[in-house]
Image (cartoon, rainbow, N blue to C red; front, side, top):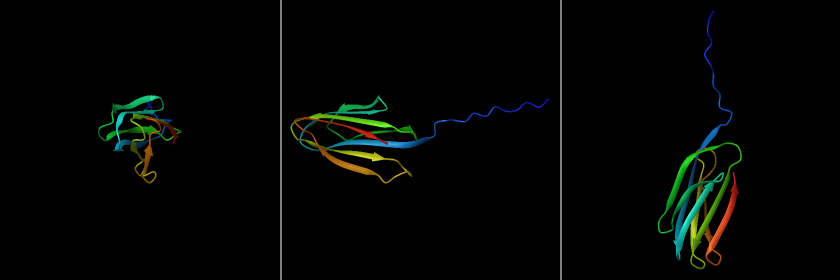
Length: 104
């Protein structure tokens, strides 16, 4: 009797993903970023912060929260290598706070 090798197939295909948060002007105090509810960035807003990882090809929820002073601005960058063009947004805080949800 010949034994067959077990074949494991992943039902969740994945893709590479990079999220960037960078202060532009004014005072940014804190950066927070979540991917599907998992905190991937929690850092002060003094420097550029980057998270790179692997995400599902299925719908993914990105949540970004930024705290700072007044109408400070920051860049939000999204990179899906080989899947889509890089996206970069310059956003302003409203009364010291900004929050957004992005579905990919």
